[in-house]
Image (cartoon, rainbow, N blue to C red; front, side):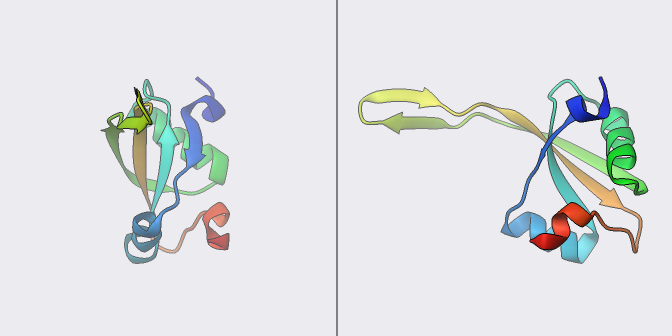
Length: 95
């Protein structure tokens, strides 16, 4: 896997913005097959920062209905990346 196969998209919400300000953590949607080492290397190469810690979690699919039709959203994998103090990712600064 190359770095662009591992990191799919940044995740921005009120909770992730507070994590960014308080603990210097950033959230990403990543490939479900990626492990913590691959995620760390991808973030370091893509954004040129030093990663201290990576936490991952699998987000389960949610059931959804539209009228009488039932379905579900896809499940996905989330990674919370902690950076070294003083470093930041410029992509998140506009938020």
